[in-house]
Length: 200
Length: 193
Image 1 (cartoon, helix red, strand yellow):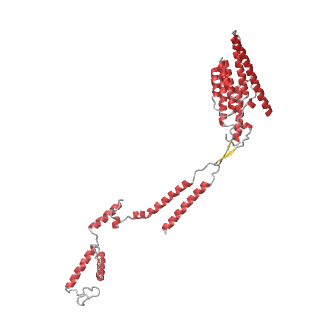
Image 2 (cartoon, one colour):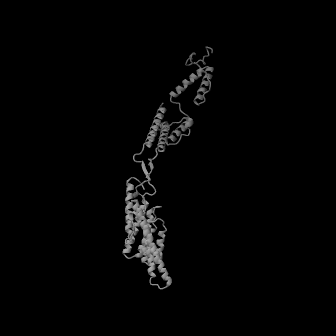
Image 3 (cartoon, one colour):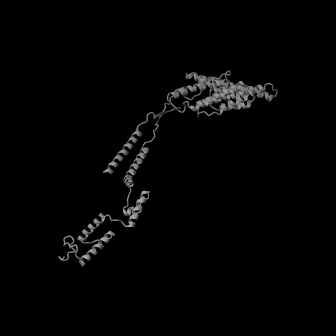
């Protein structure tokens, strides 16, 4: 770079006089840099540029942002506002996933806790099912024990001959009295059997 | 870190609940065990007592009817005893039924239904086992034969006279059979004592 033409060396080159007429190269460079800034603001930043240009571009961007004039374009603003309003009324933001839209704080917290709540609920349900499955109702254990075959005679069903005896002609019509005797005798044996813990 | 801590707490909670459930299910419930002793088939049971109770009530009912002179109702009540359901092979069943048959036959004789009375007696005599009740049935059978003979006592027809003799002999045979059974059973009872 020549010393009399140091427009390409902005940072270390000579500072021109305030009233000095811009040179053609200075104008061309200014126009190129202005195009670069315009492209950057419109979202079309060139993939490659010189270090000086990049430094100047960053400075220009900071100055622009600091001046408060860094406004989004109308379409972008409208999209963001619509997304925010939609989420506020409970709808899903259409462009949330793609544009990184605004997420309400409460919903953000809920999203953080949702997996834990699901996991805890599932665990408790699993525990309840496990308990119900493992815990069987109280069982009544029945031990069946064969009884001794030699029961007392009075506990057995047996002929009533020994109890009634011969039926004389005089008492032949006393069938009612005989059944009373048989019933009373068998009832005594039945009670004894039951009171001994034996279930007939 | 937070996830691992929470997961660990949940695992501990689940393990504790499962352990407590297993422990409580394995503990024997106090008083839940029941020991049932099976009785021999010849033990007195509820079915026998119910049948005896019903027979007793039908006998009392028949007695009331007889005291009122309502023999037909008394006969119906005694017939109910014959249809009672006793336990299988209960010796009391034969005894109670034969005693009811004897009473029924006497009531039928009182009504003049000698043939029907004889049918009732013969049903009882077919039961097989000898008992004082069977002996009583033979006594009733003898009374029926005697009643038939009495009905023929004034007949002059030779055939009727022959029938009269036949009935008297049958009556004697029945009474002898009754006495024979009574003596046999009494001897057995004496031996058993």
